[in-house]
Image (cartoon, rainbow, N blue to C red; front, side):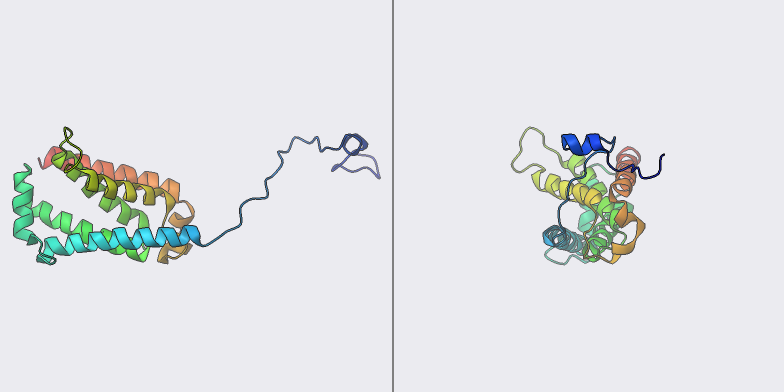
Length: 191
């Protein structure tokens, strides 16, 4: 390079009004706003709260629920061979998954726990000949948990400074595979 010359512009660039470097122009970006984080917080609180209630319903029969005995009978009716073990697993998955969502703590594990339970419910309960009265509510729960796996919890979360917060899509994919694997094992081994 000769003294007095610059690598950032040339007379050709300024004469024709453009920068002809190989670099792509950068967009100014979108300024951060709290709407996304607020929306994710509301979704987490609602979905997590509902699953805490579902789990406590199974553990203790709260909210006019089945309790462990009723949950075992329900699972037996769906054809599961180990309803006692699965009743405890489902109750724990729903309660712990809900708590993790509400807190935004170990977030991918909480969303995956809910997604795994809902995947099993959709398969065993699914009446694909009718939609209303079928599995639309379970599909909504599963869809919300699936979406949260990939968005992460938002900035209003205990996980805010963790690696899985910054890499939500990667951890979402890993925990999606874990949820799918657990669902398949449950359906194949226990049914």
